[in-house]
Length: 477
Image (cartoon, one colour):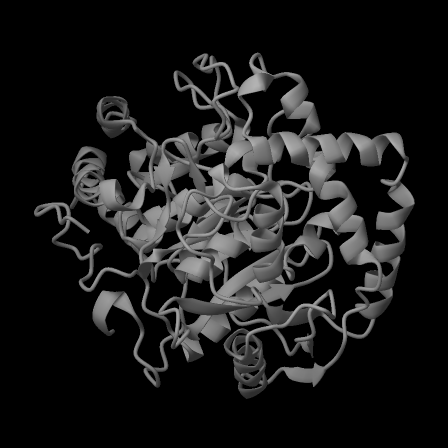
């Protein structure tokens, strides 16, 4: 085992649900060598020391988290909980009892929620403690995370963005402030920041995890997922969110038929060679693990057009219920205005998705999984994108992250797996794995194989924030 808990190449160790900090914390709490209060205090100390520079949290639930941890310590079933005492971050756009939800916007009404989202309830029932809420761009519409509260920075290179829209969750995990975080993904909003920050991120398929956010869950394109430092930790957490314990099993899969597709969905876009190289590296690792990997071209065709036509309209139901729509950012107002025009013209039709999905179903008669780059370029600069114009935001968000939204359009599962570092941006690169409906377990098992053969540095912090000593000597992260 190397620094930061990374498996050394050639160690022969296979990752499992107990190989990461989430599983290690839960095991300590279950066997009595630690406790929820101690683990939460350690996380809050790291957040206090590291959050100001990163803006990974916009709400830190210090008092409430400590009280909830103390209450958790009295639960008679503590010794059997899968996430016993694990400090977790939740993206600030789903209800958490007693907390307000602005959805990244000053146009929202800050009324405390009177209930937990089903995802939050499942986390609590499993023993996790929510230590804070993470920021997002307005209505989750943009590929960078900044709002009037601050700019979320990439822990690997603070001059660059952590990505979006779950960038706060990614920054919190990549900086070692918490071991795992919730995010939701409507156009790539888990996989994009996971790729930017060197984490494993999973967007499950439609219906796997309760998905409702806002008023219509973005026409069914949003799914709640997980960002973690290891595949095993993500699988364990996803098994709780989905109420499917079998998803925590990441034993090696049988031999798979894998397509390697590096061409971007829009041929006019250029893919940085280090990002296409990340996909090729994942393909080589899969071949070495005994899978059959062949170059192929995904049948994108008009999928990009279908996505671009939907994007401006996705936030309209949420915006229509805002008490102060005049406070929406100019970029968002223009985006939504375009969406209303597209809807009036009847340019967004269900048949567009049906055709894309039919082509993908035919493609996957020959393959079990496809590997693509997760991104086409390093993350944009960490600046106040919310004060910049609409066109600048559209170009910045779409040009560096064209590979992810296809899987939201059809509601299929997809993951992002770290594959090294970009020599110029000094930020991670990653490969995306995607598969047909119901392939979450296959993707997790394949990703765990890749991790065992190509382990990554788990966080951007130089020392191990999750050592056994952490509960006794809280580190700053």
